[in-house]
Image 1: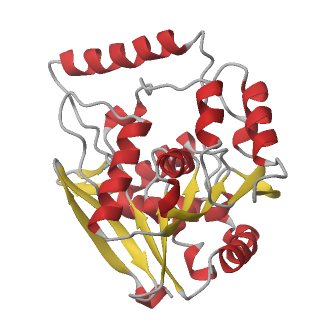
Image 2: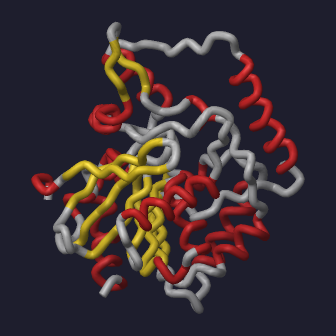
Length: 300
């Protein structure tokens, strides 16, 4: 399938959403959404191991990879990413499709599937639960934090862009993401760096690092989760997100989300695999059989 890769570009009001496409022109559509601060390269090693009859469309979410940054003054939030997904599927004229989402991309996918349940026939979540609840007592603090970060950023008189050598950029990404192998870092940097006169700069918008000001509570997450009609496959890494969530009371939230996903009245499957948060990229052969079997069984 590696020889059937092409570049994707969808116009949006502030620029374009870029990405890559694997597979035949008329294959079963599968939309792939990457995690926070990553890009669509996160699926480069996994997709060649998946069913060849599908057409995999992996996008760089706004502010990531080669996609345009949001306009000045505009926040990055989950609903905004969901709206971007809607723009992309409309442009691609997709009426029914599957979604594979890793980490933040899985949370965007979960919200999209809850809002547009009739459009998604299968949802695959890689090391995520599909929603990130915030303790209701913390929401105001998180919102304020995110707004303050944006205002401070906008008030800076000089916004210097740090330039790296390629070797220093590799070192920087490895330090920031210890779950990545060095090979995976090189893959992500294919779309994660832009060459300039004195070296390289990271392509992602610095504003994606700010707190998400559009938070949802556990109750809201569960209500949205209940609206998902598609069968869901959740693949959790043993050393992955469930151990590293930083929101208050993560154990309570994740266990509740997981319990609802495992409810027998839904057609959902939860599996756990050895590895860490980027297992799908570092060792795709661990994840691929579960994803392939689910797509073949659920997408007919």
